Length: 358
Length: 279
Image (cartoon, rainbow over all chains, first blue to last red; front, side):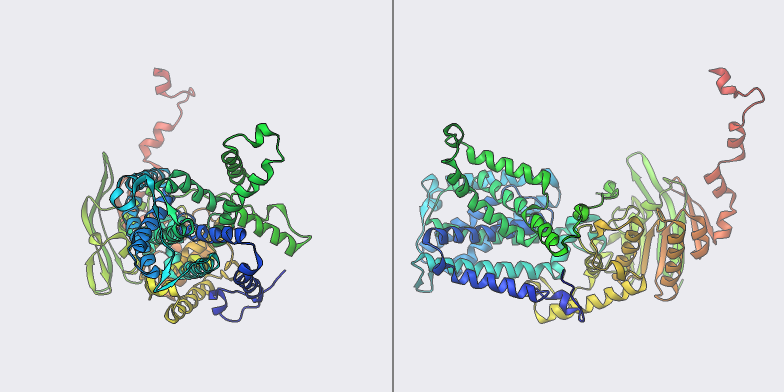
């Protein structure tokens, strides 16, 4: 068990709260930097994909996990970012500018989608964003002069002002840098007044408002930031596959993103990363065990969907706090051994809220 | 009046066919504790929601002495009310449940934020400085209400009585001029109610904050209030010192019913009332 002796309010503000954080996150950074020399090309590509999904996950986590607004059409923002970036890159725009435009346009679209969020809540917002996802997918498929329609478009290699990233290693580092910067940005937001306003809206709109928080501003802001991150992830996604088509940004992708943050742990930044790791490794794991299963089960179509569904149900039932919540419990168990109690993470039932004011 | 802080003039609110508040007028002076009492459904909380701009009055207006002189509160958007110096608590506790007590108090500092989105995103030196200052203020309130023990506890795990205090603390963190307390003692035991009375007096005397509250516990009301307004069914019944209002015949009737009501409940000698005989 670690007891931190606090002598300064700054200690609560710092990102690294104690030496353990510095050590372990330092080790993680070293591992990530050394990854191209440690892992085979295939696994490095998977790691790149994890990073890309983590960025999108961070955005959705900010929106759903910290502002309490669920988006069922998040792949649409991914698509807007990917297509904006692809079109601009193919026109010869350098990578950083194209990426900024992709993030900017996604954020602008996010702002517009955020407007219904001012009026509708919960499941109705889910339906609104879901239909928005369908609209974007349809636009991407029909606007053939720009997007190339269902045939999709190829995208050139990233070109940072004349420096073309040819290899997988270089692209990996690009994704790593962008992921680290996005994570730091989100962590900074969450420890500042803006992030606290999001959390306030998530937990009680009525009292957030009476604390002087402008609901409309912060809700649309959350949508915009979330969409911008999805746009950035989309741009990297396009480079990763070098080819994009509208069906990559359909409802299944949106559900994958949502699944990712729920399994990772809603309301934690770690959750976005754990969820992304889960989302990328799960199909691999299924493919591996397929051969060991009887052919009737192993070769059945839709095995992956079934497993995903079961896992999601299991998490909602047994571990609503997701993988990160499970990790917290394991860590506490180890730290407090043998004094861990089963009910330690049980939350007391909430008291009646003033629903009639909403 | 020179020391006037808030003045409600002919307030009425109609929800469809229900006249929740009917022609209510009152003045709150600076530095006093003003209490609204009345039976359930009297419209007390509705008056609160009018002041914190959750509802808009059908007719009438509220004037408030803001930082730049007297202004019409009823024309302000809801999120501006806090920055004008009006903080409130809720009858059913509206805390940010999945955040620590300290986090809740810091959210209370929102109106004093000095930085914008981009500064926050990069966590500039100015944000750090503002955060430290906010923390110091929050710690002052923690000290004032003796919440040190609960500083890092998540609200979701706190008992009801402590949540009440945390809500009061969060309201104080906004550094209000006018504090609206919606039933501060509901759900508290005798000891906690005494603490609450003590704090309300401290808030008035030490912090110089004007308090407007809704309360049912008459011992608390008479202990802390300077003036009391009794309401029933949306209308004003009586206004004055706690003693005056408690002895007002209209108020007694609203709470206990009239002599006629009592006699109608009285059983006849045969043990059945006339209405039962008719049935």
